[in-house]
Image (cartoon, rainbow, N blue to C red; front, side, top):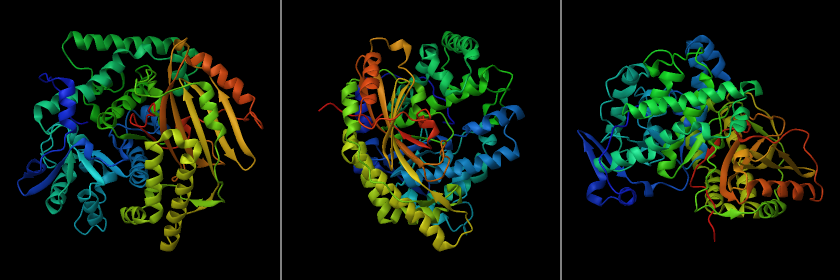
Length: 542
């Protein structure tokens, strides 16, 4: 968010949550700000697959740009051009792979990936953008604003992000249509409380206890050598000490505060003057950014789309399984895998980058029968994740392949000079069990199983969260950066006695008929593609 969170008055948490979920009475739904009308939505009115994109965060950088940007001391003109294509690709991907997208209001006028579709009255995409707003395909999220056209805060951050450049045209768009907007609550007092509970507290808790996370997993996630173990651990201790100092001074632990101390040079984080002299600055930035961006989708019960070439959600090590998550044994997980049966498809074509698609293309794609079928299959899998081995994952896979073929067909019909190349999709199920990975890949020769890693050492005798991810990627590429690859975290459960059950899983998987060790280690979710994840994708005990 581009706004800080201040102290709030008290209200019972359950009462606040119930009121926030409650639909507004008809008279309160319509809001007006001058000649701008808008509708007020509550969280229970969101569609089945609402998503939030991390890539639209103004601080996001793909890992391929981290080193060049830190070496340069900031984001250069060249970096900006590369980054814009990355962000645009993720924005288009979000519109294709999600039923509904929720955007922080500021991103709607300070992200070039978004504003390029409505700036200029003769812009051919402007009307389509307005339709997406009016139909609540794009939902502006208001943190403290009372309307979608509240003037942006006057601050150096606003100037750095180019707020003033497109805001007037954003206001004009809102005058021409009636956007449907979302807040945590439309009662100011309650909204302030919920903002602290849902957006401040999770980030604060993460930073204050950052040394309690499994260091082995982070060394792997962040590509740090073993020699960095102790220096990195000491740096994490310094993060915790800084958080305690902030608390002692009566200040909130915010990403902005942590950036100033550990990531950037100077006092204006929006300038993005990243400081390579600060130890592990790029590594800490990735952790801070992921936790920060997970807060809003968690608060709204939606999904976080983590970009390709970024840390996946599992890097947060959310190992404490909520009680509502179903409990499985290692044997039950293996039994589910034994029922996997997918229909293989022939070679297709794929686009090298989604930023080449226009908003007009997106609108056409979303009207396709294939897109509707894909959404229907995704809704079914996320609503009943335990059915993934009995056709649920297969139906998503098959519907997605049909959709990608139609997308390519449309590009060919337009005769755009976009290079197309053969795409041989494979489908995988990846189970992440507190750092241990079990991957099942479907090939023309049957199923290939891969086992790697161990359950985090801190979980001896304890339960651990299990995240199951469906991945569709190109068979020829380990790191699927191609535009139409996808993955989704479709199930969360927990495994009792995680370490002993993992040993049992290894024993049982190796005993399966036709088992063969993969020649390469299992793919991690961040090696797959953009990842759709959310706390609401949990399985439930029957």
